Amino acid sequence: MAYKFTGNFTQQESIPDAGIEAALAVLKHGRLHRYNVVEGEIAETSLLETEYAAYTGSKYCLAVASGGYALAAGLRAAGMAAGDKVMTNAFTLAPVPGAIANAGGVPIFVEVTEDLVMDLDDLHKKIDESGAKFLMLSHMRGHIVDMDALMAICNTANVIVIEDCAHTMGANWNGTPSGRHGLIGCYSTQTFKHINSGEGGLLITDDAEVMARATMLSGSYMLYGAHAAGAPAEAFADVRLDTPNCSGRMDNLRAAILRPQLAQLDEQGKRWNERYARMEEGLQSVAGLRLIPRPKEEYFVASSFQFTLPDWDAAKVHDVQQRCANRGVELKWFGADKPVGFTSRHDSWRYVEAHELPQTDRVLSGLMDMRLPLTFSLEDCDTLAAIIREEVGAVYQAAA
Ligand SMILES: *Cc1c(COP(=O)(O)O)cnc(C)c1O
Image (cartoon, rainbow, N blue to C red; front, side, top):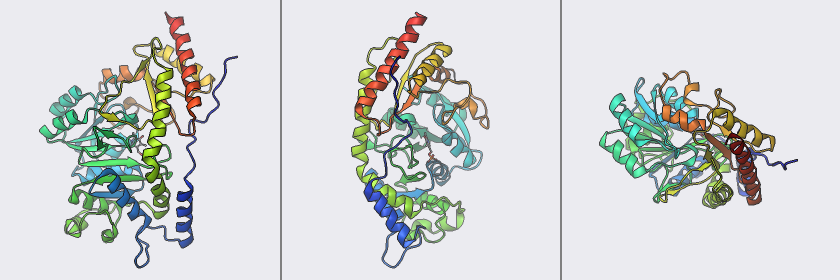
């Protein structure tokens, strides 16, 4: 009998003690709403915003109810109007086209490369063909496209960039934090991301008017002056009356849980990357299996691991997935006909007009994706790699 892996792929670490204590303090005083403060008190939510702005080097930060909310509010705050076209990655997850639809936009998908980033030639083409003035760039699974090249293309074409950094919190491109290249950076603090408050999101920008609009959208009423990392009062002069309130605030309980995690984020990033390195090591030179090259400019935070089985038959990829599953290794496959669990594909988002994306379909048909929670030890990673190596080998040899 082949050995099995028994770890739990969705088990995150517990909330640090400092977060639990801070949460209990909020529960005890009972002021969970961010605008419910006593004289001289700065709400946990406002403190989190100040700390996250400092962490990323942005002028302003707004905490909201979810990453998807941040994306939709970001689009509207950037000036997107209903019916506007918004380019985005063909390889991403459902909340991204969902946020575009939520803001009333029309998604235009851009092809993915075999290195799992946006194809910049196709981006050029889609800008020319569609005339879209917005790009929601999803750093899907933490793979960062050449940001210098992407920004050059978008700046030349006057395309506004909003970054979906759900998988790149703590990451950077050539030293610039992910989320700091475009007009707006959006992050998620949902349980499976890099800091965990169950649900939650953060939005950063250096643009006062954009931040004022996002703040009003999030449901600040006329209390925006209480935002320590918010836009200055003058930015709200017209915005406060012109912008609808679409409630999506963060509360003090979640912010209290997040602040100690933010303080540990860089340390945690290193631990994730140690696990990633062990996976890579264990899967070096496996016939038929391709590892994703990572450019030297990219500092990633590897909360997940991907590899491809390029140009394999769909049935064989499925076979590898099944065989690994039988041994306790959960691989997600982006090539399946039907969406499963958290995994879906451009052709399962039927509210979007169907796109021809032959390159994306080819890449996704061989793409395997695995969570890498910090509750896995380095030895666990060796076991995972060994099982994948064996099962890929068995299927590959049977096919040869
Ligand atoms: C999780 C996720 C989001 C949205 O985050 P929520 O907080 O769950 O709304 C956006 N983009 C990607 C790629 C994600 O994985």
